[in-house]
Length: 219
Ligand SMILES: Cc1cc2nc3c(=O)[nH]c(=O)nc-3n(C[C@H](O)[C@H](O)[C@H](O)COP(=O)(O)O)c2cc1C
Picture 1 (cartoon, rainbow, N blue to C red):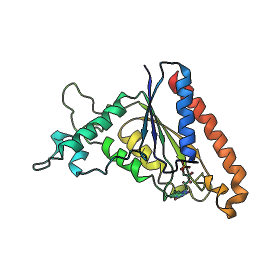
Picture 2: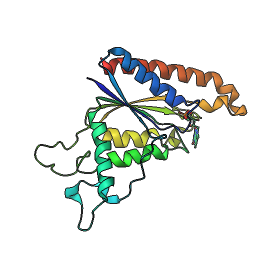
Picture 3: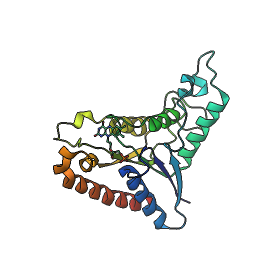
C-alpha cells in the first residue's frame, strides 16, 4: 500500500497557498488508486515540543557519559522517525517565515535529523542502515510573499529551501524536489499589485508541477 506522508506547517488555516498545494498533491496521489494511502501531519495544529535535550541529536551509542534524555521525549522522537520511515513519499508545506521556515517545521527537522540514526556518522550496528531515508522522495512546497527567483536580486535571501535541501537531501540522502509559489503577498500589499499576475502564473505553474510529481511518484 503506497503511503504518502502529507506535512503542513502554515499558521494560516484560511487562505494558505502551501496548504492548498500540498492538498492538491495529496488528492492527486489518492486518486491514483484506492490503495494510495495518505497520512496527515499538521505541525501547526499539532505542534511538536521543541527538542528538549541536545542528546536527542545523537544515536544512543554516540552519547557521552551523563547524557540521558527524558524517556517520553525519546519515545516521541522514535514515533516521529518511524512515521517518516513508513512513508513511501513525503510532501512538505514550507511557507517562508522571516526568510526561514516556520518554527513548527524546524522542530520536526530537529527530531528526524539524528546523527548515527538517520544520518551516516560512523559504522552503524549490524543489520541497520547508515542512511535509512536514502532515496525516499520528498517534495518541498515553498510559498513566499516576495520573489526569490534567479535574477530577482533576492535569491540569496531564501533561507527556506536551502536548509531543507541540506538536511533532507544532502545529509539524509532523500530525493528532493522543490516547487515554489511566489509573490503571494501581491494580493495583500497595495504597492505589490502590479505583481499579481506574475503571482498567479507562479501559482498555476506550481499546481501543474505538483500534479505531475504526484502522478509520477505515485505510479
Ligand atoms: C510570520 C510571517 C513571516 C513572513 N516572512 C516573509 C519573508 O521573510 N519573506 C517573504 O517573502 N514572505 C514572508 N511572509 C509571507 C509568506 O511567506 C506568504 O504569505 C506565504 O504565502 C505563506 O505561506 P502560506 O500561504 O502557505 O501560509 C511571511 C508571513 C508570515 C505570516
